Image (cartoon, rainbow, N blue to C red; front, side, top):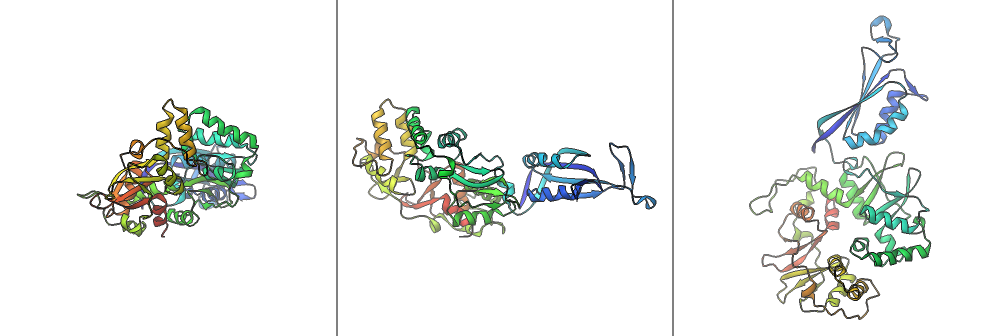
Length: 421
């Protein structure tokens, strides 16, 4: 795959006999760059040169014992060069380091190092849970990595907070709650007195920085994960890879060209998952919760809470799609109304084992979202993936030619296809 991007050239000028500890300096630099997954490094031995010490070094036949100049050249993306510099400066005590911007074309297989997020949000095992929650909400992220030194020892996701900290809502819903309700949940965590160590996922799955994107996708799909900490050869944390990182990478690499019906693509490049040639109808989930427009809203919410899809499709008597019920959109809508009793009732209905038979007094047609992200069942998965990224939707409704509900395709399905499932 060709990746055309802005890059930087890092040049390190040292002497051939320079050492760091018992190792030659230029060898140590190359090994450190390799360990941290940089794109590549080249060592060039000079014929003639001098440095800050003003001694001229030459490769002439009568002076072969002199210390010759050596240049180590590393090319990678600017953010990866920037992350490597502190480690390089610890190694180089004498010599010079320069950086130069270039336009580069990388010919490579898709590697984790090229698509991961470098800025990993971390906490210590003893961090109190209210601080963890504040960090997740402030950074608008779904997980933090628990570290000891530079080693990842666990991870905390919204699911962990639901399962082991007794939180009432998914993280994605908290942003829609008014401040007083968010404060109630934070106080519950404070009273418990738990720390990151108490709720983190202890059996941590990681991926090496040089693994390919399809390899990472296969691991995530097999273990039902949405993100993986990325480690170098020594096990130190160097980044994090999310499901959306993988989906974006594959979509970009597919270089899709819409045809007349916006569902045609060019032949799939051989290095891409050939499963992307399948259609939405081939892989869609068929067990999709539905409800009629005149049903009470609590009927839809009971189905929504019980389904892993976290949404209910509204259909008419002919199974044509009219709208969709989404918990986040409902909370957003009712949190803006000056009726705290309605919001509290809605929040209870969205909390498993808490809603009961409470009446909300609203019909589905009054609460549904009429705009539904959808694709025809004949749509190739490469186009489905692009549609997901364009809309930001985690799940797309699949329709037949008459607009009737056929199923749903989600990001987990797409990740499995990329991973070879």
